[in-house]
Amino acid sequence: DFSYNNEQLAQEIADIAEETYRQVNAQLGSPNKHHHLQKIAIIMEDFSDYALGFASSFPHRVIRLSLTAPTAKSFDMKFKSWLKMVITHEYTHLAHFEMTAGPTTALRALFGQILVPNALQPIWSIEGLAVYNETKFTAGGRGIDARYDMYLRMATLEDQFNTLDQISGYWGR
Image 1 (cartoon, rainbow, N blue to C red):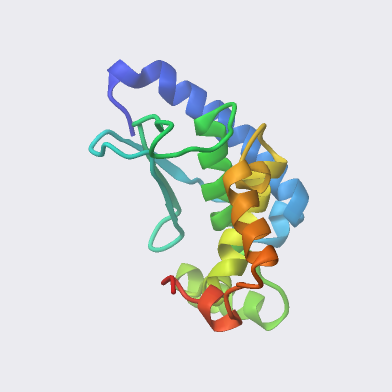
Image 2: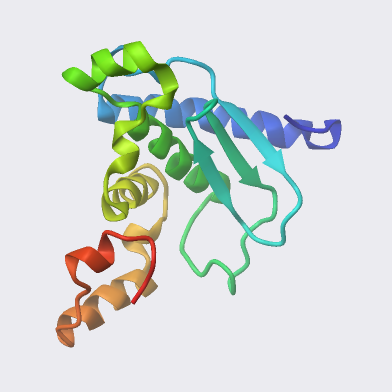
């Protein structure tokens, strides 16, 4: 979804999305094994002052991208291409949510996209895989960011790790 003013950007996003699709599916397994063969809508939105991305697999597979580029103040992280990083992160969520095995494959065939068992995993697992991939498949990401490294280093030095129930929820301490 784009206006003609953004046609070149839309093509760049499509190229990045195709590359990301191949990379993530090669990592997570054959796309035929999962349900992410169907088209994914990528919606370019220009309504926010923040650099954002969002993915959802229900009711339709969609990635929403804010066209606002991140600033050093709002997103102090190392990256070569903001679009590559955010598309990789958000597509990883979709691919992860679509994965099924054993009984969930039969249930998914029966109930369709309404059943997204991996979305019930703890937030550290859901976001952890996406952050891992944003680092693995791009020239940046939080996995090699000095600020996130500092957070972990200080938690280690001060023996101040969050508990499992703290890291398994969406809310901080």
